[in-house]
Image 1 (cartoon, rainbow, N blue to C red):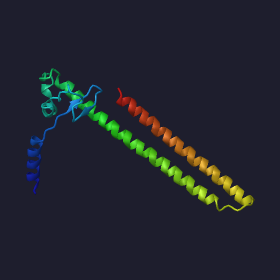
Image 2: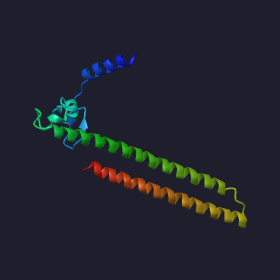
Image 3: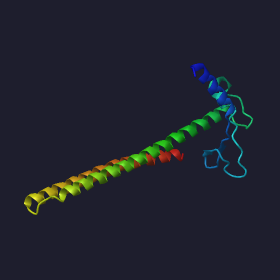
Image 4: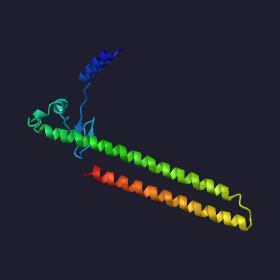
Length: 158
């Protein structure tokens, strides 16, 4: 396919694709009705809202202004971004724990080779201090990640 064919195909598909979006009482948006009384949002003017800002004072059939719809869409997009950031941070947190556990196990394995003498005891003490440092560093990183997650969650709940 050449470039023009792809553009035409995308335009045709975009006009034929439609889906209903419901806004629940808790502020979440979803494809399925929230309850028996749910009514789908009127998103027919979303494309024109973005394309023509001169119509921002028009009132939609549902009784809310275009700027309200813009605000709802922007809020929805930001909430989705926050949820993705939280998921990424939670994955980073798991990676930190996994790296910490791997390093501690490696240090434990190295400590098994210590001889029963003063040099071996000194080496084991050194390994124990290194394990403590690894665990403290991981705790610091996890604490930072937890604070970021908490901050994002509080922003999400506003």
